Image 1: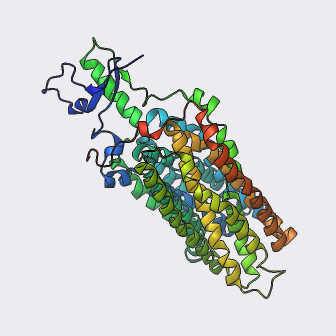
Image 2 (image 1 turned 45 degrees about the horizontal axis):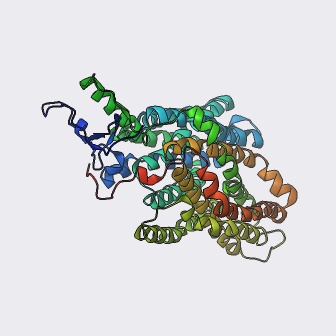
Image 3 (image 1 turned 135 degrees about the vertical axis):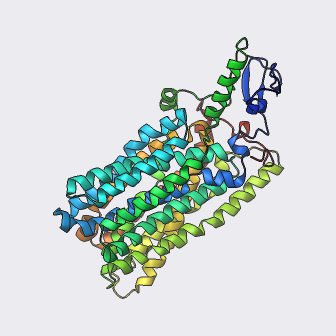
Amino acid sequence: MASTENAPLNPGISNSEKDPLLYDLVVDSDGFVDFTEHSNVKPRNWLARRKAYNLGFLLDFITTAISAAGTPAAEFAKEELHISHTQSLFGFTSIYLIGQGLGGLVFSPFSEAFGRRWLYIISSFAYSGSCVLVGVAPNATAAIVGRFLSGVLSSIPKVIVSGSIEDLYDSEARIWIFFIWNVTVNCSLIFGPIYAAYVAMVLGWRWIFHIAAIILAIVSVMLFSIRESRQGLLLSKQVAQLQKLNPHQHYQVSKAARQPSFQEFVQVALVRPWILLFTEPIVSLTATLKAIPIVYDDFGLSMRQSMLILLFIALGLISSVLTRFYDRLVARRRRRASLPLKPEDKLIGFIIAAPLLAISLWWFAWSIPPKMKSVPWIVSAISLVPLGYATNEFDTVLGGYLADSYPNYAASAFTSLSLLRAFLSAAFPLFTDQLFVGLGNNLAGSVLASVATLFFVVPIIFVKYGERLRMKSQFNMPDSTRTMPRNAGTH
């Protein structure tokens, strides 16, 4: 239906109406309703501090750290629980990641339909309880059940944070927000094993989970003060209230804010993440993290000392801030030229990271014992810096690409990608030991490096064909349809 220019909505509503939020709506001649440009209700117009507080970064950091803590915890718990090394790894690490992958299938579409706020609150409280269960587990079965529940609940911040970012920030701002999120989460992968190793040695492995339960209980209380950020849901509530006040008028949510059915989305847009799977260096990172205690034991380092080697990866994660400055420069150039900022305009980090990932793994593979016994440990440790950079760039760039390509379904698009990533990450710890012990450190590292080398072609495909594939999707909506000036409303 054709529509006339939008005008502030005041369909006979007097100033005595109790709900002033109705004055932040506009309607066209066809009855489609949307928020005004400067509406205080619109999440993208909230104050910067309110937006930051509303994101689930802290919750995602904690749950990811406790996920990564599973491998050290398994080493300490296996004797007390009378299980083998492989069974312990499966129970504390793999089962967690399987739960995380499956949980996202349920919770991300739920958040698209019913909002983010209560999912954050419920998951935090329940995750705290699951940590208690693991901490007091009398046997392996109880510990495995607790870890599976933790994994399922961790999927909520893992996939929904991406949706919250899209709710709150436009395409240009997401350059930095996705970077901050991915640095936060990837650093938690480094922090988790260090935290677990030291706590287990000083207090015992059960305190890894007792401390986590206490912290998450506090976070759960804090989460009660966040707001719902799902714009389509907020608008639907306003439209429903408006309809009650004006029963003789027919109103409906604007086309830009309308949410297509999840069934439609599955049919059209969830295929792309299967392609994105092959751009994920998280598998290489997972295997490298698991192999580090094995490799650096040959250098004569203890487990606690080996865990500190992970800080070199953290340096690489932080160094990817340099690429964001280039992304920012590209965004400003396109804005000055009055051109839209396309998802493909932010692929430079991806292009740089692909070769660096392979280089870092080849470097690591051939600077460690037994073939390279005379090489100091610092040489191989430095190779982990570009590995950290590549890992964060892949996550940041591809995360932004999904959010830009499917703005209404950012969380759902992340779900399939997170599912595949979780399943592969769950499998790798089970045979990393056999890989490095059976083939030797150098050949095993070469296997990972060879796989990473195949990634070289993927950025070329994205640069050459990405826009063409993206434009074929009916769910690809230009971000400008939902982006307002930065000096818009203040609440």
